Amino acid sequence: MKFLVVKGRVDSVYEDKSNHSVNTVNVNSGNNIQIVYLEPDRSGLFNYLQANDSIFKEYNSYDVVVKRAGKENYFILDFGCSNN
Image (cartoon, rainbow, N blue to C red; front, side):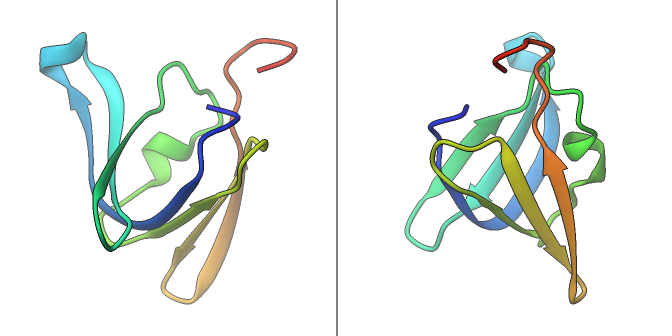
């Protein structure tokens, strides 16, 4: 996840029942849909996200910015490891 780049609009947020109920986010980056798995992240990002939020995550980082209604919220992905 650290090396993943995410930049786009959230299309959907769901528990993928066909894939062991993994927390999943579909992000529209303009030219494709990126599937992002947020299991077992403990930052609260998955529960916060809604369709049409803008989401940004840079390469080599665990920091995520979510923009909604003109406000920015910040999350640090937490997978429960010392190195994440």
